[in-house]
Length: 297
Ligand code: PPS
Image 1 (cartoon, rainbow, N blue to C red):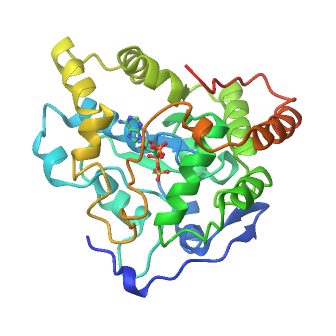
Image 2 (image 1 turned 30 degrees about the horizontal axis):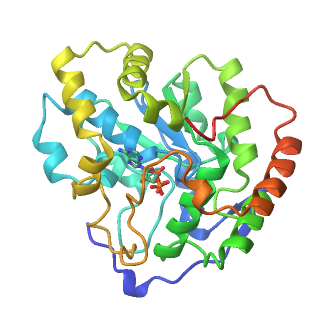
């Protein structure tokens, strides 16, 4: 699948049912809302830049690393794990890719806030893995991504981006509402595994154990060791089928998709004043939740 990037323009952000979105993620709204989930589908849900690709690669390896090892070396991650709501002209939409998938289970990615998830996933009692990343590292990663990706709105400079992130004026809306919305859903819907980028960075093996237990799968130690090796940052950064280098919409000369893969890189971006202002807003917006993040490990 190639992306005709020359024909693409940076989109405008607009309000869509109360969430900032761009047409690339709303153009196939009806089709996505009517998507027919299967009971064995597994959804990886995240706010953008929270570790989606990392967990996608983990799941793909856990399920298919042994039975279909050629898959990881020949099919890019965005085809192995379709991005449900994306629609870019002249290429199959995420929903179409998912519909055509023959491998079981289908592993499907979404950045939707919880209220946008097609009802069929809840009706089929599908398993969903939500990956959350602390707001400071998340916004830094998102800023660099928006700089290099033509299907994202123009990011502007770092201070203005940081401001807009706090106002929810970036694609997929408010980080605060996103992480809280999914956290609240987890309290009433049993099949959500809520995990954190920071935990995965600190102890990948332990987080993979938790994922396996949630998914009721029992890979051998050898298989798990293989997954751990394959999903190390430096290995994934070099892996063309996982690093998005085969996609035409991203300019790696500006910033690579696999950029740093670190916890606390925000310290290299936030000024002292920005950090204080961010903390103040954060405390207000996160006062009504039990959800806690680590900004360092
Ligand atoms: S996207 O576009 O929303 O799907 O991006 P997403 O995959 O969610 O997030 C990209 C960030 O995750 C980092 N990443 C990793 N970190 C550590 N280890 C591994 N294996 C790994 N794979 C991806 C990636 O580098 C982006 O973070 P930053 O901070 O920008 O480096």
